[in-house]
Image (tube, rainbow, N blue to C red):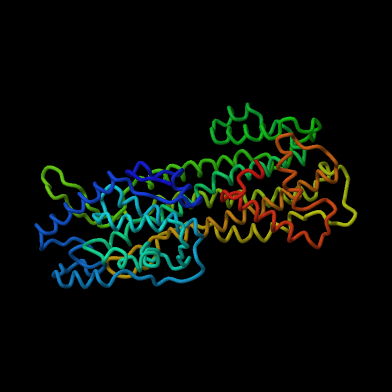
Length: 471
């Protein structure tokens, strides 16, 4: 169980444990006390300033910001509760659990100004129950919250002042989808390196392409890191190498993986920041000298611009690796030097160019920047959040990369089968795993199913379900 005491307890590790691994959450006693004290201060603030415009607190949301509600109208506004209006296939459970977990960031130190009972009720959503949120239509965070919390008022004896806004505003979804892709990226980079190293060994790429001295000449830490991992994976492989340079798609592996490593670092930094950041709107700031009861401020903190930028960088890096993978598959399928003149009698070798061309084309259509929408929904809500649009694009590009890597890995394994060459020791387990999805003498009419199963397993590994199978 993950016990939350303050914002410092929100990390990628605790996110993974809760969202991906299903651990429940408990709010620490000191945190509950602090939440209660902040709630009492907020109530005093509103009571002492009955005519002030406090967004979503003494006013309604959206256009209603202009009018301070009477106590009766405020009660009616709260009793309406919250509602969902989006639809479509459900989001993965790991994403929905992540959204609930990141909802607690604004609550844990009292900046949402809600009651402790509401915080505990939200934490209880992570007790293992099935959580359903449609995957489409979320241009704002409120679409997610409407589906998640629409029955919550019955469990807390009705909502009180500011609590509906605290449930639907902020950017828990933007934070969650960034964390989801960041965790996937950690596994995906290693999968890329293992697959491309297997291909480099299959075509007998000269070791000079990944020499340590190149890292010093190129003066790039990320490219040097990629070269170091390539050298490690290829160590002890065939002593025979081609006497001339390998195709460009193999020589630029360090360059392209370096881009992915930089994108990953940006995502890690953005995720770490957003997991500690209060993003509520309005946000309750605590009492201090000059404001004895604190204050309620409207902000743009709910807009996850940082997350969208980091997600787009991951998508760009993965899309380029897809194009690189396409070229490598083409070379693997017909490299005369690597095959040594050997050709399969039945033509059953995976054709990388044909298998990956459609994936590469679709990825090129997806790899577009995520911009602010050109239309809004009123004078207040005039610039929506596109975090779900960015997540869907990046997720689909990542899934395409997994599939293209599966084709490449299967094609490389066929090269080793046809030439009967041994593989570098650190790639033996990976090659054995790839071969387990398609034996050399398997019928060609099962190829699509075999490659599909391998692609699915690669994706499962990325999302932590096959973490040790290909280590």
